[in-house]
Length: 261
Image (spheres, rainbow, N blue to C red):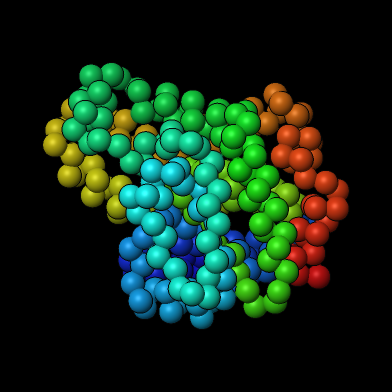
């Protein structure tokens, strides 16, 4: 994990996607693409770190309200690209806490069900589909050596997790490896989630279970997305081509940019 986790002090879940192997023996380049949580609280030292790492572009998957509440903190060397996956945050990364906790306390399993619904929508709704198409279009502009693009949402786990999964699979990384990258979030943010659970105003089991469901990633969630991909397109390759509208040339260029020869 330490090889993937970046040394960012005032941010969460900043990870390197380089080093993964494709099924045909290539390797994803290092210092080329990063995934993360929000960038609103980055320190000057964090920004220096990312600048030295080569980051020149931030792709923001968050909703308009999330961006308004906590805008990215960037340097003048970094370009910003607003690419909202949802019009409103369906993963409950932001919400009115008191009323939210009351609803969770009263309804068993609501967190898990809502996350499954969000992952269904991530794959099947036209708005996320267009956002992920735009994500790939932006990735295809990252052609210069020693430059990296960073993509993120608020927690860097759901909208970002699906973005990373689609990206790795598009490069030819096998499904199991892409799944492991998705699930790595739980290891990275384990202490943060434990503190959130400890800080809850009640030990109501419905509340604890649902907050954990919202704050973690689960194979159930990714399996929901995978099921929707199969239902819509048969497999991941056809989904990328027919639903996300990526051409054969787009996918070939993506591999040229992000894979070592």
